[in-house]
Length: 327
Image (tube, helix red, strand yellow):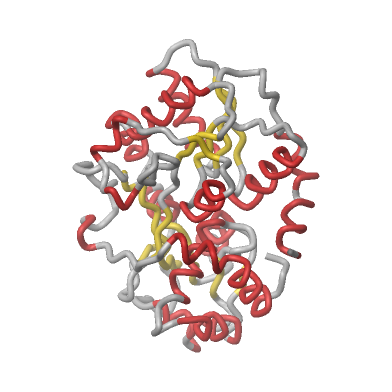
């Protein structure tokens, strides 16, 4: 509950981003980085001329806090969600907050990547692994390397209290018998700092403030290509993954435009847009971005969305007890 209340207090700072439901043909709430969100909207508008779109961006936790506050007030603004993970959308589905839509583009996707009833569809694969500064003394290959003496006080990681991807990552790793919550306790004992989101981790490692970071793949791979002194590692045990699913809100007044947006982001053209932004497309038959290993070589550790949903409150409390509640 403390986490939920903390998230709601963030709405004060977030209120400047409020949009009017009647101001556009489609309102999108997303956790994509700003540049990526704009590129996605620009691509959609190019494919659907005349559709006026507004979008609001923040971390998934804050986006959800904003959305739930609007729902409580009887005035949900978003028509479409494009946020970090399926677990969050499982909760909304269970609460009957989503509209089912059977997109014709779904036939090009693995059935495990979308909801069988059409309530949400994965749009990409975003894995979480280890980044390190090229000046670091150790070149990590395993998650356990971050708990070694060589990494003491030199690890940055996003907090599950702030980042949806970080929550999925924690739930995935702690579900691995070789890691579990003891691994997170070892990280804490080794001086790992857990706060904020992935962007802050990227900055701290790229600038050399920290030597190692737990971060989503595309950020360091993108920045390395620009010349940043960093490397990204897919650890031997495997990586966690979020799939940035898209969903339509129940009760939307812009259902036709919302369906067009879902179809677009799932289409080959929409998926190619994500590829150009540096993401692994979820659609079958698509290539991977430059700098990534072959898709079949990336080992993704399993996570059951329904179980993760049921354990979310407990897991957030456990993480908060270990690292403190200021994430």
